[in-house]
Length: 142
Image (cartoon, rainbow, N blue to C red; front, top):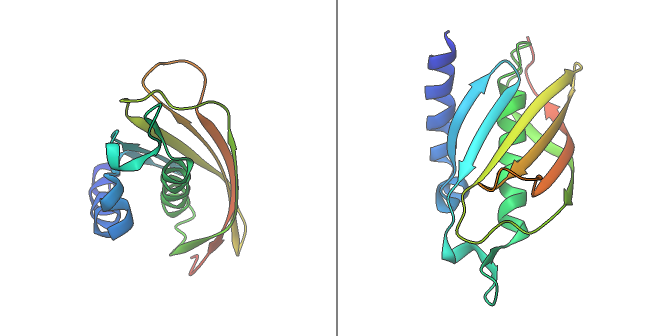
């Protein structure tokens, strides 16, 4: 299966998840253990009406989904996955009106657990909005 095929299949999977669809998540890149998912700004996701800043829960969901996609794309071909632990550090507020993009890398997989690092950025090209580290269950690894 080519990277283009993996991207198409994973994109269909993510768009089939009602929560990801509701947040407008779009899979932008998928390769061996790396995933990039974008989420457009949407006023429905604002957590602070005075500033227009996106709610941290939406950023968290984006990073969690991106980490799971990175695990599923790892070259060891793990099957399904579920989050065991995800630690997110919010570094600054995302700029209102800007798209947020998460990039995750699955850097180690054992027989039953995968380990992932991720960052989320807005379009300012500055420092990250958030970073994350997590562990995920690996099911049906071949």
